[in-house]
Image (cartoon, rainbow, N blue to C red; front, side):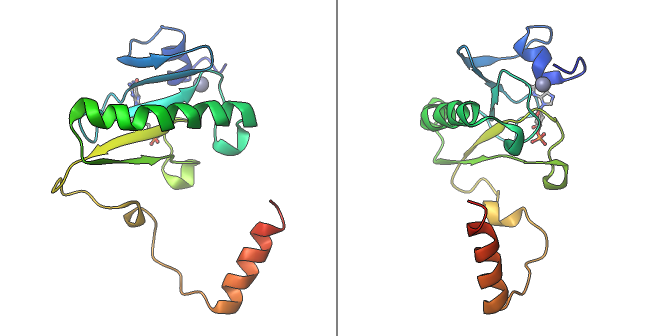
Amino acid sequence: MPEDCIFCQIVDGEIPSRSVYEDEDVMAFLDANPLAPGHTLVIPKDHHETLGDLPEDAGAQVFETLHRLAPEIEAAVDADGSNVAFNNGEAAGQEVPHVHGHVIPRFEGDGGAPIHAIAGDRPDLSDEELDDIADAVAGRT
Ligand code: 5GP
Ligand code: ZN
């Protein structure tokens, strides 16, 4: 692990955290600067920077945990919903380079925005460009 990785240090217990779930491969703990009550981070215990770096089994374990915890976190703080998302890479706003999924509880009238609000200006794409993009992605899946 990189010695300066905050989340590796949390996994190792060198930095304290409010852990809400832990197993052999995954850990979930409250965000230190929460955007909402119950804001939780789910991480693989092994250090990987982005989703693209994460081995398939670790990705499945992280998603399994997000899937199981999101409704329980909502219930614990009496939320009306949640945003479940990754800032995947520096350009997407990832500040801690150890992959982590956010569960951000949402409340009716909380003044927040949907996930559509996070990207930059909307591109104006023609049907042909959309076809090309779909082909380019489909060709790699
Ligand atoms: P990112 O922008 O990388 O997706 O989000 C990193 C998140 O980690 C932020 O929401 C930030 O508040 C949280 N964070 C940063 N340092 C710590 C820490 O030492 N402990 C905990 N619990 N959360 C942290
Ligand atoms: Zn790490």
